Image 1: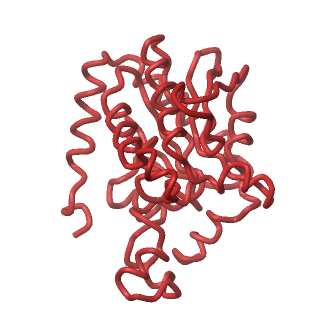
Image 2: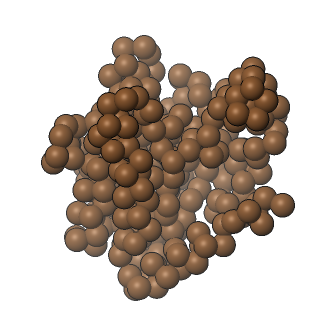
Length: 257
């Protein structure tokens, strides 16, 4: 499959969403709601669970499998309240020394007038800053479409993994094509230039690993999380923050040359 076909696969409405992964990988999940400031954003799900008996915090974007579900969760496009909820849960996880595992699948943060007036850009920046400085291990998994700052807000982790058919980019290929070529229909061409696929990003060193998608995907995901946490939990908070800082400082324009 070429990069555009993988994009369409990542957007497939039948693709497993966060509820599937929570049910399959974690036990005793308790969802927590609200940002304690304004309202609860259903485009972000977050809560406490156990992973092989270890208490963890799970946060991720929610997409639906039909029109009614997608309307309820705004097609996975998060508002400021969703990112503030994520920050609240990450700080709580830090307080109780729980690792944070995020599941990323969004076309981008919601760009509506209400979201902008409620501080969308500030909420995204605060989420990135919070995740960058957490004194507890963090793992991000791109399971579908990871687009723009809306994805990065909960993907600035110690380890970032992607599913084989997932995509991860600075903005949607349609947006890229509209800016560069003044024609959104040239999104397939944009996909090839943007390097959005898991294999391409792994080759560039921008993600830490790729999970093959087949009948054993969940087994591989479970093992990856277990193995990564086994290493990360041995590190002191100061070491986690230092290594995380160095990891993202190395990502610059030179990576794309």
